[in-house]
Amino acid sequence: MNQELDKLLNGQCRHYSKGDNTLSVSRIDELRRLTPKWQFCANDNVLCRTFHFKTYAATIDFVKQVADIAEAQDHHPELAVSYKRCKVNYKTHTVNGITENEFICAALIDALATQ
Image (cartoon, rainbow, N blue to C red):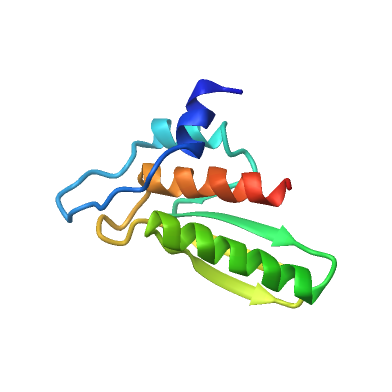
């Protein structure tokens, strides 16, 4: 496994303060190579991905598992849930942008989605 991806998968989100910096665009691009299905939406300053499911029940099971990750990491996404789809948006609100926290959670959710 890629060492940097392994670091994300074993990482723990940290708390940021208003004065902390967001990631540079070049660093975001580097980390997106590890989480290629996620999109950086610069206009909204979020990292996002839409997941598709075969049933509503599978969608809700996924949402519950994402909630478990969010609680364990103390980093909570915005979720848009519909019949067979869930859109996950992450950003660090205190710095109004993208930090390593988004990529830790993205990697964990990607691992969940491949199970």
